[in-house]
Length: 150
Image (cartoon, rainbow, N blue to C red; front, side, top):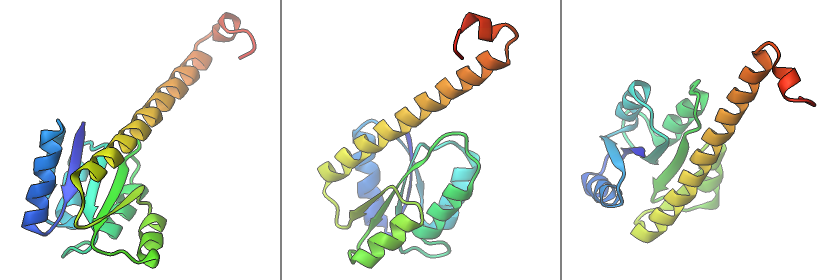
């Protein structure tokens, strides 16, 4: 699975990238939200992990843009930040973040949260595939006769 990370702190970015690669993920790296947005527009990333406070575009704005984009598949987003106030959590989740991890982060905590994100992404894809198949079967002449009650 491909993951896009955005963090302006080189130490945090390298640590995050190292963990993700060790866990078998394909990782794309951005040094700020604007660069992450450009990468996001060019490729498909089922998961985006972003720092909150970055130059050019912060993580909350990046998540807002991701949510406003017309992608066919769901994108699971995690805000990784030193912010810890309840108001910050509310603002980040209100912008569309799926999860919120405080810095400094524990590798194993991030790993289990990523697993939850993968389950959600996979369920969303399965549901989208089933809906597409159902629409196609209804569009096919004679499909209703093949599926009584549909």
